[in-house]
Image 1 (spheres, rainbow, N blue to C red):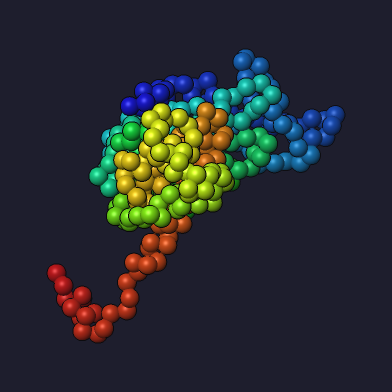
Image 2 (cartoon, rainbow, N blue to C red):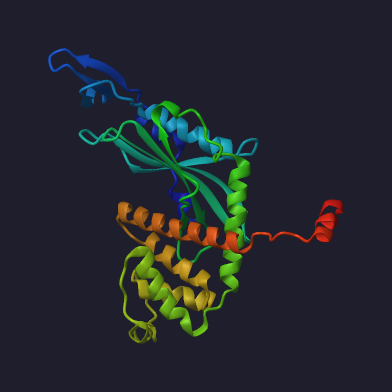
Length: 303
């Protein structure tokens, strides 16, 4: 699997495991944050007054603490993706920590990772959020982000693990996601499929594609699958039918093929927000109504 093959060993983070120090510049009366980089102390930012900040070492440790908490008492096999390595004059870091152990959701295999992001342009905040990679996919790897399952952490709280980073919270999220996937598989849009697919691409990814009739002509007899929205729609429509699940896969398939990392992540975030909204909407529709007294008694006495 491409995803697992491309994951690096945890050791790749060793060179980025850098502490940061604060000192006062007596000449400018400002406070300077420095890190050890390639054998020398390098100034990465300065402030007119004392400011909360953190070293890359604590960012990395905070990421591992969160993913370890989700898989507490379970076997783990960690790998790493580096999205933005530390460079001179660009002191920020973006990376993922993934557990290569598979998770089963809605009869498919997934891998969980945590995306970690920190920059001295905004030194008081760290961003952590999870990604679910679906492995059983002919389109290559795809990801799901959740707007309701992420954290922007004040640096002073980096080692205080929020309650969302627990096994119970994660299992609750994946159960809801699995229910949504099964529902999307069953929802047949019939003749409205193409129209709905076009509308979804435009509203979620902000990508305009041809109207329904023109789209059908474009998708007619083409065999070559490239990186256009139309091809993603055609491919998933053929495999998954006229379902909302096919549209979801079209979105993630198209996003996963973006070469630019920033654009790919932007699209995945948009898809994640869409999925989260669908999950919330589905949950509201399935909420239990008030029981009649006799039914409540039966519920209480049920073994």
